[in-house]
Length: 617
Image 1: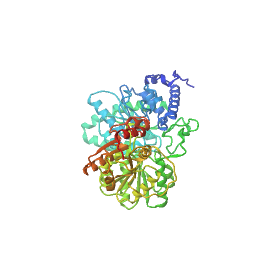
Image 2: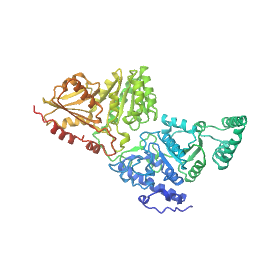
Image 3: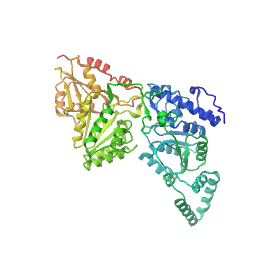
Image 4: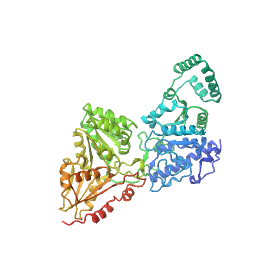
């Protein structure tokens, strides 16, 4: 049995991946164990993407062993699976996802090994093509490698790149990490011979010479091409990637270092773009994550390593996702014409059990936001009742469909916009603060937000009655658990105290602020219907001499700007103060820290109101 030659006891000793080439296979296995232990320890304390990172530990080590990414280029799709990459390139991930700490995603400011920052999934192939084009334009010689998952490659953006790359002479190496989806591959002895031939050095040499000779005799060249294509069609099971024009290598065991060494060496020798199909076990190394079939361990909050239980427990509260989960269960139970559509985030929005209860009327489209919205819109026009559950940040991808295929044709889809507002440790790419601005400028849509559980039920019921699309925004936070009661829908709620100053705002934080300032000489208004604004609300606001607008779930271009415009157009000449999330990309930190950095915490707002709304009765 081979003895390990790994001489590292502490993962923090790693400063670069150069040592990997000297390790034997036993040493690589020991290194994988150290890396997995580190990832489990850190995510249990900090939260993060666990199972996706555990699954690619061996694959990432093999990539860094076979390529030199000081010269070669490695592009991660999404980047949430790059923890091993960070460790191998000398980064201590103990500060993962904390304010000022290591990002949970690839970050160009962190390391020269990080060359591309993904916003959303499925963009890596297009980025890889750009790097390959630049390399060849400059007559440079290095490999461009992209690592993409099976779910991401099914997205339309990835398919656009897959369609384009083989038509060019700019070679890209695509590593497909397959941990769930069954992708067909060629089988049989003849197929294996062709696979080996396609990437052998002798085959490449002969193929180039054969083409040069035959091109001199065009009829012979065309005949040879027809014979080759006939053989491939009739004797080899061609998969999608073959048909597109890629050289296909697979299926490779993503936990077998020897097999990956062979595959990557073949890929480097191949003159044209290649796809290496690697099969991995998501969550490998942590039994609870390995056994997970629902995605619970994909992204986790801090947890106890031994039990797997979350370390934060709030028995008197539930998440806003769970509030709408209960409303959806009730609607699906009582309305046989109701459909729920979700583009790949059932688990994140706590809807996986809803899909199990109603599998025929809960449609998970995978990472396909545009497709999901078009399906929903047309079902709604066919007189079905339809809701789309979608993260705010991912809904940005479907803005074209929202405008053209929903709003323009008055399609009455209900959008449940999860994680609206600041989201905390996921940072810039996942903040849900921008959707409201583009919704406010889109015709034929309604925008709403609840401040407590009873508001949510009333808003949801009203949205189902609306004749046009309704977007219900809700945050990534907890709300006090109460027994819901039926309340009549209203667009806003005034807490009148008979003063000439007013604070108007949105969401649970405004409800909290209203309670915090009850000892101050100001009125407060909790706004539920953000668009369209009710005329009676504007008339109410015109009676005040000073107004503070508090919108901690969106940038100032959202309802805050709309309120200011409406008041100004009606001749309001008094002071208006707007406190909203800054129009910028908010870096990772806790939501509490992000609110404080934006001057939007309850404590900061109370002081701001004292300073600016000192108006007596």
